[in-house]
Every structure is written in structure tokens, then in C-alpha cells.
Image 1 (cartoon, rainbow, N blue to C red):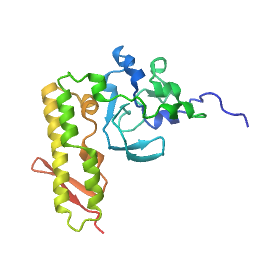
Image 2 (image 1 turned 180 degrees about the vertical axis):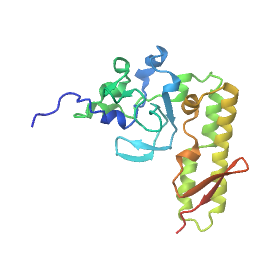
Image 3 (image 1 turned 30 degrees about the vertical axis):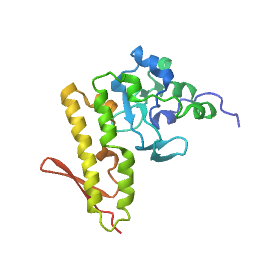
Image 4 (image 1 turned 90 degrees about the vertical axis):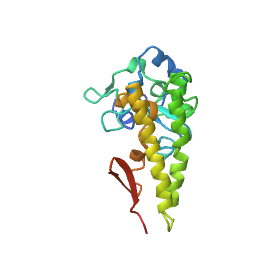
Length: 222
């Protein structure tokens, strides 16, 4: 059997999700080869797919990735008809290094020198304080702790109250920011990531809206 030495353009890599951005990719943003609407933030400790372990697990640091296409994780720049990248000549670092037949180069850079939101927009950007407030009041570390504790707690009500408060605070911050800065949905997902209630959906929780507010109930009791 001949050993593979070049891309077969099967699209498998592109369908697994867009790349995380690194310091080397800032020039793509400065040249507007990539714009904020193309990006999605994965916040620190948010559960996400890890190419290192092939599992969904909390990320150890904030990541900014190229967002998916529609409701899928397939990279937004992947053209399935021609099995091609539509920004191939201006693709990010991880895409340039990725070779499915030899992953050594890509594994060397994963999680190293990755960009954060503040790296991209700058700390003096008027939306930066809103991002810092979200990180302070709605940390995924606390959310994950509450979810783990719920599964073994005989008294889930206080934990649900704390978790509900985080979800509501996250929604309040992003809703006010959307109104003040006139953010589209793609921009909201770059600046604030996915809403917490969407990320934790399916974790044994019933999430519903009542009288205009999010409510939770724990349904995965033993």
C-alpha cells in the first residue's frame, strides 16, 4: 500500500470544526482576510472537543476559533461541493500545518500562543469591560462544579439557584451589550461565546422559560 503524502481533499478535517487562532493569525485579522463575524469564542473551562484526546472536555484556556457553518461544526470556509477551502491561500496557522497523515506539526502548536478576545480587540475596546464582567460573574469553572455536585446532591435546590443565577447573568450581560453595541448574532458569539444555558443543555437539566426568565429543574435524579 502506498503511504499517503498529500491531502486527498476528503474534507474530514474541515468537518470536525474550524481551527483555533494563534498569534501568527493576527495578520489575517489586520488584513481583514478574517473578520470578527467569522469567529466563535470558546471560553476557559467551557466543554469542547479536544483533538488531543478526541473527547469533549473543559478547555484549559480561552480559544477563538473559526465558527461553523449553520448549525454544524463544519468550518464556515469549507466548500463541500468542490471539497475545498475558500480561503486556502489565507488560511490560519493550524490549517497550514495540518496533515492528516502526519499530525506531529499540528500537535506541536495546539494550545500554544493562542489568541483570546482581548488579544484581538485590545483592552481599550469599549466592549472589553463587558467581556471581563462576563468572565467574573459567569465562570465555567463554577458552572462545571455545580453540574458535578448536582448529580450526587440530595438537596439540589440551592445548587439550581446558583446555576440559574449564572445563566441569567450571562444572558443579561450579552443582551445589554447587544442592545448597546448593536451586535449581530455572529458578533455576539465572538464577543461572548455561546450562551451558558445552550452549552449545558442535555446535562440532566430541564431548561425552560417562564414569565420572561430562564428556569431550571434537575431531572437526572437517581
